[in-house]
Image 1 (cartoon, rainbow, N blue to C red):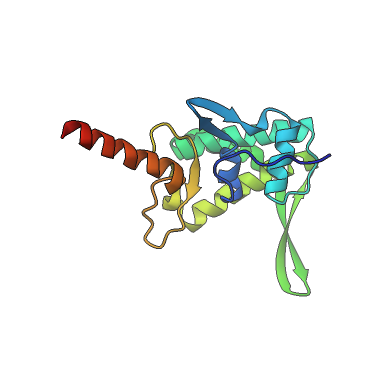
Image 2: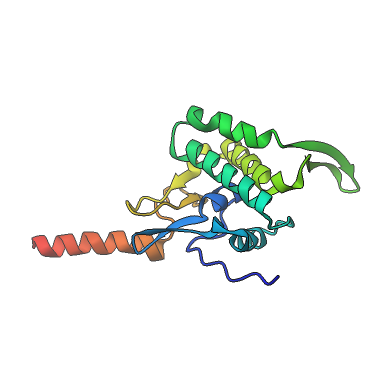
Length: 178
């Protein structure tokens, strides 16, 4: 099966946020990459995940996306049990490799793999810098990003898109007032 081009306006975020960003706004309407297994294949390929793009994997990815949205967009306690339910489908096994100590993810059912990896990644982001997990500041944007700017003041998913629209709106408002 050939994988089509990723249509999303923001890619390359950490796995958990990239899963959230499979929903975005275009011209006032919500777009959703994960409406079918073809979209799932695009998301899996974009993240270098070698899992089957089948109905079970899609269903589990949607479960994880909803759980992550609950904790990222609301109080942590409102969605923590949902993220925990996804995490219950996998575990980390300690390993020793030629390069030294390591970890390997294991799943009882491989169709939970991408969902579990996204939930696990969210825990890593919380452990690293929870204050850098951000929602785009543009009022009509639903995208999320991990702020890696030096001073931690990034506000927009993309300066070229949402940041530019906000600046243009402020400019328009100033010129109308003057």
